Image 1 (cartoon, rainbow, N blue to C red):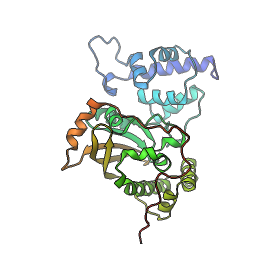
Image 2 (cartoon, rainbow, N blue to C red):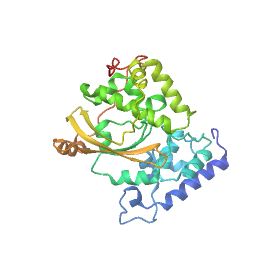
Image 3 (cartoon, one colour):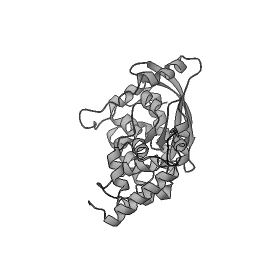
Image 4 (spheres, rainbow, N blue to C red):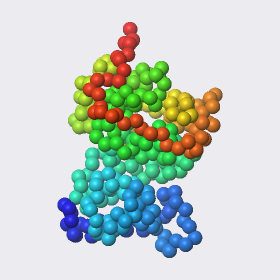
Length: 304
């Protein structure tokens, strides 16, 4: 049974079943339905929410199957609205290391997931302070692409912005310099709020300072400012340029933020955002080769 013992497999299945049975369908945005025999979620509903096959999830609840990956555990924790302690317990039952908060497998607070689930008419997503996308609603995927499945350094949009030129297609070229400045100022604010020895921040800064002259130039300016609200122009491959307001709700520790997009006043963005559900998901461009070791774009002009 892989690295897990039979006892842990059995406890894992029992724990998943107990958490599933306590959740009402309305808690996760699902209809109750007229023929529901039990008050909790069905197994197939949990599988759907976690992006797993029904057969695989059934095996887990039976205390069998293969050892779940760290990504699958994170997805199950979100689907079942686990608390931070419950999420950590689930990782330990699966014999997987509990991830450090702030990475791609970070635990999303159930309250943020609840708010995200209620935002059915506007693009919204939960990201970390290092701009790692944790979860998106369908309209956010349609607007900016599916960014929640990336791992490693590339999981951070800021890392991709300064190392992968294709990432910048999301914004008009005229906006690239202002976006770069805002990203660097926001990253400096996040780095200051975290522990000075935080490995994620340290690794990101070392990499970006080494490979991106643009980032190094901007970092030397010492600008610092959280992106609490913003106005952006987003380039959609089908709908063209959509101008939006970007609003943020921060968690208590500042490491996560619920980001949602609203149409900018005085533009035709309201109608364009309504069309997102029709045109569907846009693709995130993946590089054909390893990410470049130089920056995307040349260093911006320094202010005198």
